[in-house]
Image (tube, rainbow, N blue to C red; front, side):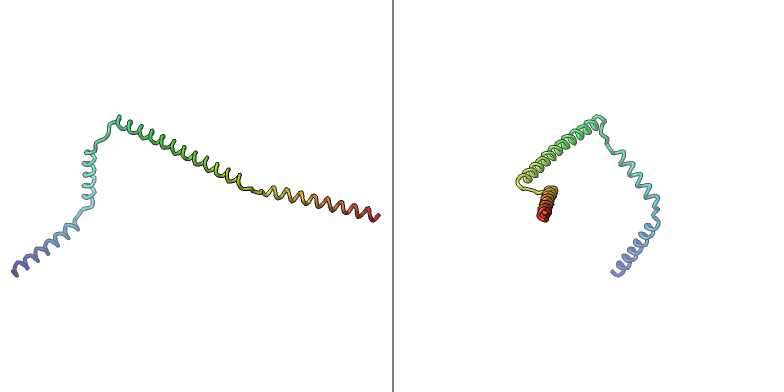
Length: 129
């Protein structure tokens, strides 16, 4: 038994040393060449579609894309119109005052106040005479 253990340890050491030698001697150019050889062999296995099938499938894709595009455009238009309608309905129910309305009323008040002041000044002048 002792002999078996010694021989098995020697075999394991020999395997490890052989593995190290194999790994260190591996040529990177050979692995690159084998990669391209396998790519070439896989490329030969490819089955290409016929021209008629490709054109038919392309036409189907274009038609489906056009139909989906029209559907999306329609939904977008309907939603936009709906939102505009909601905005208009909300605007009708609420009374808003714009800045120009406020400025116009202030200017009118200033004008009437100035006219009143002028009229008072005239009456004071007439009374003084």
